[in-house]
Amino acid sequence: MSATSDLLAFAGARHVLADSARDDAVRLLGDTLAVGAAGVGAPGEAAILTAARAMGSGEEARLIGSDERLPAPAAAFVNGYRIHCLEWDAVHEPAVVHAMSVVTAAVGAVIDRQGGCDPQEALAALVVGVDVASGLGLAATSGLTFFRPATAGVVGAALAVARIEGAPLDDALGLAVASAAGTMQAHVEGLVTLPFQIANAARAAVMASDLAKAGFPGPKDALEGPFGYFALFDEGELAHYTRDLGSVWRISEISVKPYPSGRASHAALGALEVLRPDAGQVARIELAAPPLIHRLVGRPYNGCACLSLLP
Image (tube, rainbow, N blue to C red):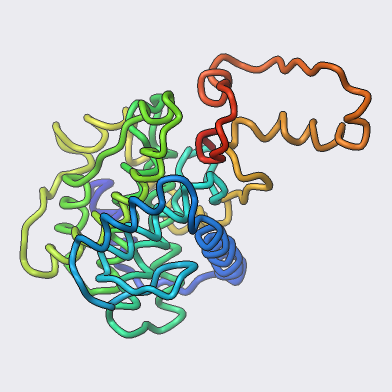
């Protein structure tokens, strides 16, 4: 069997979650929904909502933090943006993937559309999707050029949704990779295009599963093929992740954020928190940081937490 075959078998298998993985899934789901509710009214969110309403009418799925309902792909789009737009969403740090964000937005919209789901199966789909998205990041050996939370996120989310919907997993995987997009240029420029890329990945995950369920084909060697994920988006070897499938639940490795800003800024923010009682006596602060951190967060504050950037 290939590493891709192993991944697909894992994505479709019946899993009895360990108590620790189930507890982590519930805890992180609560954190993700709370962060999404906080994103209502954030910079760029009104435009995202306007565009989502133009995608079509319908009341299939709820929006996080408001009473409105939209068709499932549109709801996933809005909810993905709301979850990530404050840079407060949980992250798998070694993988550099906000897996909870994309998977929660996509899976939640589809479960709403079908009128509900067994809670244990919903958690299993969430955990599997997060595992796959994080695993693609762990298998990567190159730095980010594409925005990995979106490119890896759409794959994990599509498999999670296909698991819920009973869609062909191999086609959903291929269609997810065909839909993958996201550039780190938005990071460098500090634009709200960044959370849009999470939103777009969540919407694309729903569409990939829907198309697969409707009989539309996706490439079968979309991860390891000559023009597959690891040839185009990230250098790496999928087997570095799949050889440990089922022995470690990657959802239990995810970190929540104490501050609504990029992870690269948190060490400095933690030090400032310690200094806060004596702030009146501090005349100047200098931070010595690696060049990567300066590139990602070294820009003047402009009133938008999401522009402080990265995990």
